[in-house]
Length: 147
Length: 147
Image (cartoon, rainbow over the protein chains, first blue to last red):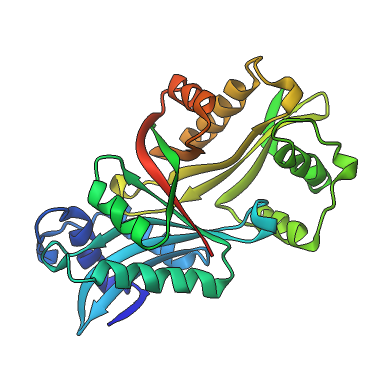
């Protein structure tokens, strides 16, 4: 099992994970639009963004995007923001999510980040218990404005 | 009144705003450490980060940091994350916060962002009403892990 930046060839696998909240989506059925290509290229070229995949035997089982944000809080240290945290629908409940998160947190720590932050939909109580079990404090409310 | 990226000479003003949650802090009393210098330079050099200041007659009255994040959600569009939103303690309650936010949201929209997101400490009920009045949905919980 390894956690590493996704290769371009794995973009359909990641899009399938993101589309498959409740069921396994076949990566071959995913339409990779030009906008997704551009977004993938932008992430890959940016030293402060990583699309990370959890891979076992060539199979993409999980993903998350990490953004490393320079800032004036925390004495000037970077903070890491995690988005799009996902484990393949048929592989949940076996500790893969914990593995994914622990490896990604270690990566942020190794980079010198002072903080990891993420938001989770208020309806996802099981996810909240999971993040709390990893030591995260549910200290904030998350606000979104669609443009 | 304008909203624009902070100049290096305004770094003490921004640090004073961030230090002055309840009272006005004199920028001349702020110690600009090397770490703050580095963080400011990192933000200024990054095309996906902006330290924005709301300025009136040469006076820095408010600030926020915007991070523009490429991603695979929202059809591949960027999202904007706002952090370190602050209005000078002695100038609150007069609409400056609304002005700051509306200008920053317009900036994100002009860039093509599909979403603006931020988190706010659960104890800050007045801030939550303010964000709701700007159209933000309080849909998520925000989790933080100090490293």
